[in-house]
Length: 88
Image 1 (spheres, rainbow, N blue to C red):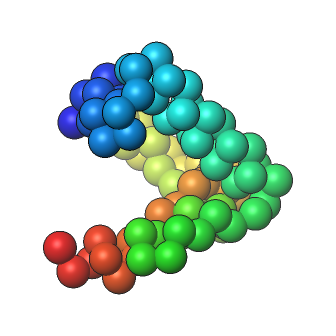
Image 2 (cartoon, one colour):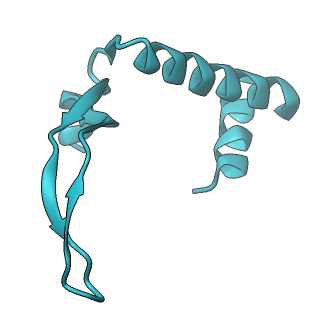
């Protein structure tokens, strides 16, 4: 399902115009991203949890040359499914 299709479903469920549904979806994504950037965890009981995962620095290899290289530590978004999603 694409974002456009998702927005259409939200508009249908809420009985609002697609523009309002699109603004709602965009606001949800923006706020969730901002909270994760700030290091917060976002939890929706029964649905799941969005949080920041820490990735340690490690050694890697260039697959074309085989040369060893260092991969820096990084942060990434992580989603853990809640009970309702695990038991579909």
